[in-house]
Amino acid sequence: MKYNSNRYLFIDAEAPRLIGLIEDDDIRAVHVLSRDSKVGNIYRGYVKNTLPAMDCAFVDFGHKETGYLPMKNVYPKSYRDEIKGGDAVIVEVKKMPIREKRAVLTLDYSLRGEYLVLLPESKGIRMSKKIKDKTIRGELMRWASDLQPEIGMIIRTEAASADRRALEREYLYLYDLYERIERSRNFLPPTELLRTQDDTLDIFNRYGDLPVVVNDKKLSERVVGEREIIVDPSFSIRSTPKWRSRFNSIFAKIVGLPSGGNIVVNTAEACHVIDVNSGTVKDDSSFGAMRRRVNLEAARVIARQIKLRNLSGMIVLDFLHGMSESEKEELTAYMSDAFLDDLQITTVYGFTAMGLFEIARQRSDLEFEEQYRRAKKKYQDAMKEKIKDGKEL
Image 1 (cartoon, rainbow, N blue to C red):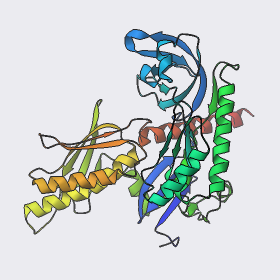
Image 2 (image 1 turned 120 degrees about the vertical axis):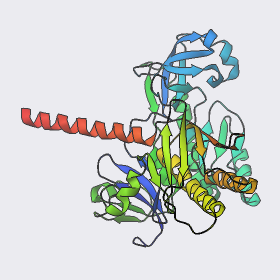
Image 3 (image 1 turned 180 degrees about the vertical axis):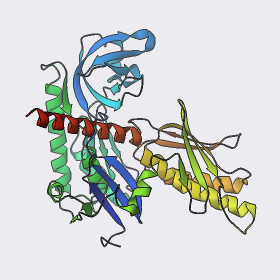
Image 4 (image 1 turned 180 degrees about the horizontal axis):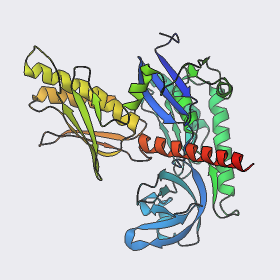
């Protein structure tokens, strides 16, 4: 246990910079620290045109392509019959443009803090289901009700252990932000970025009690908050042999299993397909026992790879066949539990009549491989320009 903890965050300063979580000597989460994702960003924009036949509108929010605004994402609902070209709107990006698809927008924007989420186009108070203690739930609900909020609010899991003064400060900050955004609705220029979603802050908040390992002293000085900072120049998620193979597995088509089996990840236009193979498994036990062991190993690795790679849409798994009903129930229960902490909305459907296993995962951003590729290209292009400028001087 090198850093006196089997769970810690890391920031790898090598370009492109990465932030992630290591637990039990394995990479559990990894994100590009500086990336071009606009998911969660809030913009002022205006309606370019509406298409009643497609039940949608297109919004100019300051980017090359207009955004796609389905009518189901138009709030309040009474506005759906009145929305027209030229209307000034506040939008949040729900999904990044993928291939030929435009960015998906919503008028139901949200303002996220560490403990609370304000929903300007909603009403009522909701609370994270992960807060189990009835006493704490009651106290938080009474606190929120006393505020008499005019807009919707979600009380996040982290609020359970927060000081009430911290909750009050965050509520006042987010409410002031909401009022400033609404006041700017008809300002010029007609399109402007009003708030950017900081994924780094979200990760720090989610794992607020963990130490942070940073391999760059200057970068460590920019880590905010009261937390343990460990500066280790030798740490590298991409160069150290211990971590390199595990990081590279995120991009690999074939990923090995401890027993000698493997999974094969294939991506098609409409879905991802993951096959489980027994490979070179050497097992003196029965075929049934071997099959169960390989399938359970595969389930653990698949759940982890789906989250690391940020796979989304329909995901089809093909486990080793011939399972009993109890084995299928065991796998379904495991996969359901494995996605309880997932940041994306994930639905585990289980086995079909054909023996395939189906999962649907919310698509809101690019896959990690594409995010990483873009960030790497951006850095390389910037370096080429820097070298070019240096030569010209």
